[in-house]
Length: 388
Ligand SMILES: Cc1cc2nc3c(=O)[nH]c(=O)nc-3n(C[C@H](O)[C@H](O)[C@H](O)COP(=O)(O)OP(=O)(O)OC[C@H]3O[C@@H](n4cnc5c(N)ncnc54)[C@H](O)[C@@H]3O)c2cc1C
Image (cartoon, rainbow, N blue to C red; front, top):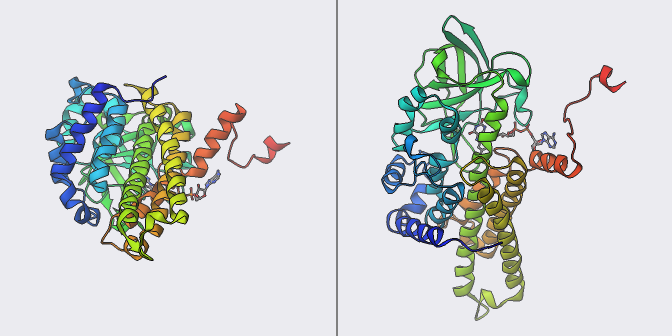
């Protein structure tokens, strides 16, 4: 067992860090408070080879591993937390599921623009009545000749105000086996996008409504029976949320450490007070242990999709750590940490969201408990007949 990066990984990390320092660090504060997707950053990253890191060269990717993509998120977030969203989009988001399962024609149509940072994709899974109970989703896809007719609505989709293409989970028929997904472009007749609402993080999302929205059968990404594959692809997205949570926690930790080293109260730097030293020690323990879980999930996936269990353990640990550390950093930096002049409060607000998004901490713990007891725990109420 080896806990060090390889020589190539060390070199890659240094290269990405240099790029982020030179091109992204200066605008970090402004970017964090702009809800629009930073297409300029996406195009810059495309030129730098930071999009499609894990995709094969035949798809326009770099042929790297999931660990490379994790390293890229960490190094970018250390200089500009908001720009790490672009690494997420270009490597971990729905683009990854799309690249894994899309047909050659679908990829030829959209993948080039996505990887070049000219277009962003949004994922529509959650519905007003289907959040954690995702398989209750009602958005339907009814076959009509060579088309599908889509009806239903989606909420909370990241990048929805800016996306041109949407990966939408739909129901072709009843039951989990009836769930699949379709690709729908902004502007398709019958597809309307509501006014933006804002999360606590200031990120915006729009309600997506489908009223007899007609798409050709060629736009089906995964047909009936595709749900398991979609969730396998979604574990990559989860790892991106995991990596960003931890990276934002570390950003806040570093900012608080620098502050405590220089800020004087009672004629001494803050770092000389034991009450604060122990906070830093606890934060370091949490960051270091969560990082090992993240690296295990990513390294074991290599060029494939990560294990559901290892992803759940890593995500729960990093989501919790990222938020707790960022919140503690705000405390250590006092009123300045609580102000929008620093990015520490931003890291706290963003990490809070990842405790809910993409599998809440509670739902991840349900998954972990199933592994512990080696049995499935159905979260649904048993029917009267089944209970007898
Ligand atoms: C920042 C952010 C970004 C998001 N991006 C997207 C996106 O891009 N695309 C998309 O489709 N959706 C997105 N979502 C939505 C997200 O997937 C849902 O919020 C999530 O699945 C939880 O659903 P819910 O909010 O409806 O909460 P609910 O399912 O109503 O749950 C409410 C609370 O009850 C808990 N709970 C529910 N069931 C159980 C159970 N069985 N056991 C224990 N606790 C339980 C939950 O953990 C939660 O704390 C995003 C959300 C956030 C916050």
